[in-house]
Length: 365
Image (cartoon, rainbow, N blue to C red):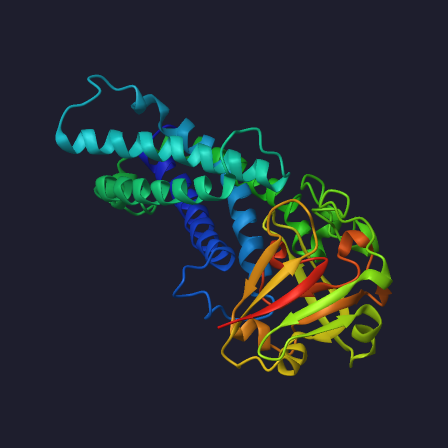
């Protein structure tokens, strides 16, 4: 069970999980922190795009948790071969393994703790997690390149290297692979329900349940945590700053044409759920302010503390007819924890950028 065929079989699963996790992680990062050249080109469709990619990101990361120790268990006798370095190629192999194991363990542990919003470290999670992801990707590419001949020799049951292995080991290998597959299936089925709601009844191990929260929708940051509380109706003002700036009271905002849309809210921690939102189309507010069709929009919250107080939308997101300044959720007035009196809801957008307690919209040139 410590032979090359076993290591290759588990490695294929682990490599696939890492590949999905890496690609979807890049999508999430660029949607949250787009470089300047991409900031005004972020797409708003498909509306469920971020829900799918971030759900896959967290699910593949959790699936990799039992796969990584299984892979290490399959190869660990060879990790202690002596002498530790026998050639330049062997040195590159050892270097790639060291970087890969350390980086992969770091990514899985910190990613898992992020789903529970627990940060027992002094550094900022997002930039460090992103940087180490590139380190792991590079180490993985180097490792595959170095081990390519051995991987090819044991890739399938009919490969020459695999046929040379003892047939007596096959039942043990199959038992091990079945146990690893069962572990991956168990952790996936008991957590993926936080984003794939048809399986929400099996959502036993995930830190969020899609139905638990005010108005049947989870909340990450409460009004109290953001230092907002309940904003009095009579004191609320929405400022729309553009070529023709104007200000609306809450009564005036409620008096504008109201639209209803069904959109998911999907958070970086992996949970998501669709809901019915009612409010004023952002594109209507921008038209009244004389905003150019290509302009980006900055959304400013009334919250006093915490990250993501300010977010920006590309012209496509801002002008999408599904993008609302929402006043109601599932037919009810927003609660303070969901952003009363007004919050942003837009398609294909991370939950942290669905700004709550909106007080200002600024048209950017």
